[in-house]
Image (cartoon, rainbow, N blue to C red; front, side, top):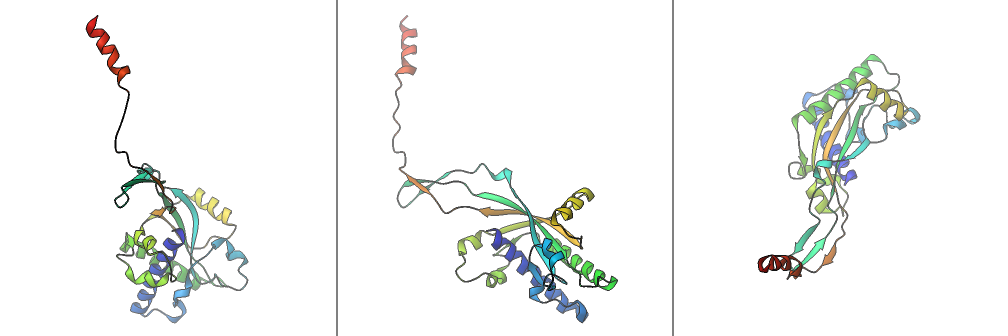
Length: 226
């Protein structure tokens, strides 16, 4: 589900930037194609000898956390066909921290830097305009997934991105751990990525409850006859 979520957002962002580029008739030196908005490890930028990651918009997953407020879900469901109870572990809902970086070309001139900042503005504008992502409101992105992708997984995709602001200290630690020089970036926290294993355990339904009530009734009888 994590990879599907990232591919989904990549396709939506790519479509938005390319449509904006075509509608404004932007300068040719700022043109991007669909392959220039890509998933990748931004920490590889410093060792990018062939320039594959330069002059791009790179989306990197930098952290994953569990959404703790959704942990108390039920562990069972009744099968209406077999009339049995199926036990399962409830799904985990994840928050993904995504780093969107507008990388520069060499040499990093002022024009290149301005171009990167413009792309960063388009990323923020994209998420400001659309607060929720699902296959239902973005059916055009279905073509981005390979044939044979589980349709049930895609139907459950519902992503809620929100801008995540880092302190200067956090920024320093982040780029220090990535081992590279800072480029124009913005981070988003994408909420509610659902992960669940397809495994259940059948158990018979409870038809009758039997119990020994003597321990409860005996003290009452003794008290009444004494």
